[in-house]
Image 1 (spheres, rainbow, N blue to C red):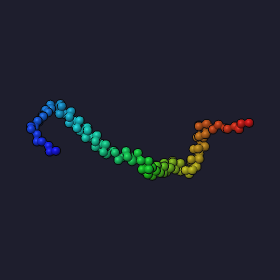
Image 2 (image 1 turned 90 degrees about the horizontal axis):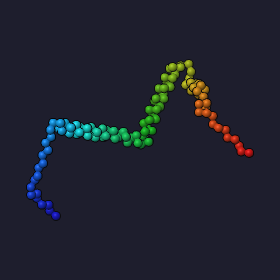
Image 3 (image 1 turned 135 degrees about the vertical axis):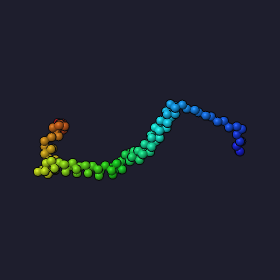
Length: 109
């Protein structure tokens, strides 16, 4: 069905004062900034949601951090090797005393 041509055109005009114009400009700026921020961060959020991508990113990073920590440890205590440091730490802290020994199971008679 064909559309009829309009009989008349109604035009509305909105006049803003300076303060209202400033508020509207600020609102438009905030909306634009929020939209730009969302568009910028959306790919990063998708990567964080994906477990395999996070693993792919975090494992090399953790490997690098662990290597740097070990090199710092070796530079602090150069006379001992890293496995010896680890063993000494385990002996000094005695985690089983901190956590408590597991209860022994007694056989029922």
